Amino acid sequence: MQRRLRAADIDFGAIRTDLGLSEEFGAAAQQEAENAVDRHADARIDRTDLALVTIDPPGSVDLDQAVHIARDGAGFVVHYAIADVAALVTPEGALDQETRRRGQTIYFPDGNVPLHPRALSENTGSLLPQQVRPAVLWRIVVDAEARPLSAEPVRALVKSQARLDYAGVMADHTSGTLHPSIEALPDFGERRQMLSISRGAIELGLPEQDVIRDADGNWELSVQPRTRADMWNSQVSLLTGMCAGALMLDHATGLLRTLPDAQDGAVVALRTAAVALGVPWPASMSPGAFLAGLDPQSPTTLALMSDATTLLRGSDYLALLGEIPAGAVTTHGGIAGVYAHVTAPLRRLADRFATEVCLALTAGEPVPEWVLAALPTLPEIMRSSGSVAGRADRAGLDLAEAILLADRVGETFSATVLHPKRGKRPAQIFVSDPPVFATCSGDPAEGSQISVRLTKADPQGPDLEFTAETLP
Image (cartoon, rainbow, N blue to C red; front, side, top):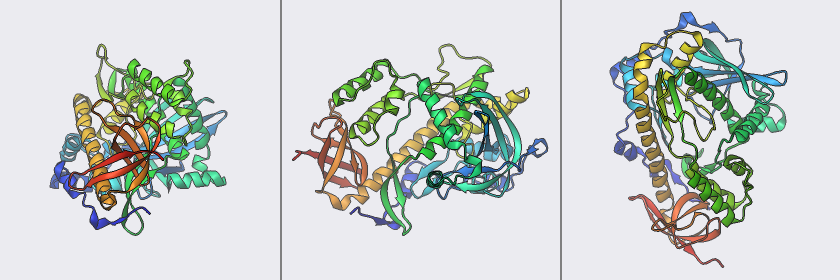
C-alpha cells in the first residue's frame, strides 16, 4: 500500500524562498490588474454567438483557450479563442514590467506563483464559462488532411459555454455524447497527428510524474496518464502556433519557438539502443514514426522514450526584427516545422507579444513600437524563467519523493531500467509504484525489469538512493 501524508507534512514554501519567488506584485501592478479595462473594446467583433468550450485539467481557473470545431465538407473550420491579455495590460506600465521580471507562471504541488495577479489571470482575463471576455479569435480552415488553408486572428468578444476536462472528454467520447462544439475534435486530432508523424515530428510518451493531493487532503506521488483527449486538444494549439510562426517568418518579424533538428549522433544512439533491446526499426522510418508505433505497455518502450529525450535538446526563442539572422535556427525540430507560442498568454509572457505581431501583420498594420522594442529582450526572459520553472518542478518532486519514502528504506521495489550505467553516471530507473524516476547503483541492462532496494531517502537532501538486486 502506498504511503500517504497529510498536506501539512510537506512544506513547499522553502523551495519558493530558495528560488526567490513570491506572489506579491507590488501595489501599482496589483492595482492595474484589479482595474484592468479592455483597451481595444471599440475594435472588437461580437462572437458571443460561437459556442466555444474550454478543455483544461480539473480545477483550472486561468483559462487561456476556448475551442470550437466544425466540419467543412471533408475538412474543418477551427475557431480558437485566446485570452486577450495585451488588451488588459498597459504597455510598459507597472504590471507589464512586473510580468517581464517573472516570465511565466511557476507551478508547485500546492499551487502556483502566477505571471499575473489572480484578479486578472483567474477572473477578468480568464475565459471562464458563461462570461463575456475579450479574446483574440483565430479562424483556421483546414483541408481533409488537416493542412491549413487559411488562418486569421481578430479581436473579438467571446463567451465560453462550458468548462470541460480531459477525462470527461474521453468519457463523453466513449459514450458518444461529446459536446457538439467538439464533436469533430477526435477526427481532427487524429488527422493532425498523422500529418505530424508524416512530417517527421517527434512526440515522447514518457509518463508525467506529479505530486497531487487527494480529496482527503493527502499527498501522493502519481503518474498522470496522457489521454487521447490531451493529444486532440494539443493539436489545436500546435496548429495555431504553426500558423502564427509561418506568418511571422514570412514577414521576418516576431518571436519564434525554435529547436535544432536532432543530431545524427543522437539518432544513431537511439537506433543502437533499439537494436540492443531487440525492437525492430526499419532504416527508412523516421524517429518520430518509430516512437509513435511503439507498444505503450512494453518496458522497452519506456527505455526508448527516455533515450529519445536526447533528440529534443536546445530549445530556444528567436526574435525577428525585419530580417532573418544568418545561420539562425528558425524551425522547431520536435514539431518539424515553424512554430510560435501564442496560445497561453495568461501563463507565459512571450505569447502576449507574439500575438500582437500576428494581429498587426494580418491586418496589414505596423507592429506596435512597444512590441518591437520588447522582442529582443524576450528570449533571455523566457530562457531564465524556463530554468526557474524546471528547477521548481524538480525540487518539488525531489522533496515529496524523499518525504513519502522516508520510512520505506530497506524495502524492495520493481523498476524498469531506462539507461544503463555510463562511465561515472549511474543507471537510471523508473519505479512504477510509487512512480519515481531515480538513479540506481549496479549495472543492470537497459530496458530490463529488475528489483531494487531503497537504501536512502533523505528529506534534508532531498535525495533517494536505490541499489539493484539480483533477479530471482
